[in-house]
Image (cartoon, rainbow, N blue to C red):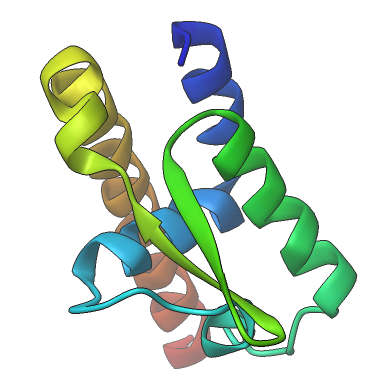
Length: 110
């Protein structure tokens, strides 16, 4: 795990969303459980690529269960080293998303 790898993995809003959803989940999740992050379902190949980047950065671990991969965050392993940085990135993303959503609701009312 490197700072550059973590920053690259969390530079995409979709990957941040996947990662935060995995952090919030009570158990490991497969790709299809997170396929509808946006209003339009994401192609499996795109979703697989996002999971691959998160895995290569060391943010998640995936285990094969039958024909699917179950993924979970590696918070215990990297939380001590990168926790404050990752928490700041997630908080900034949430704030940005909230601002965008408020802007969309204002535009609808106008």
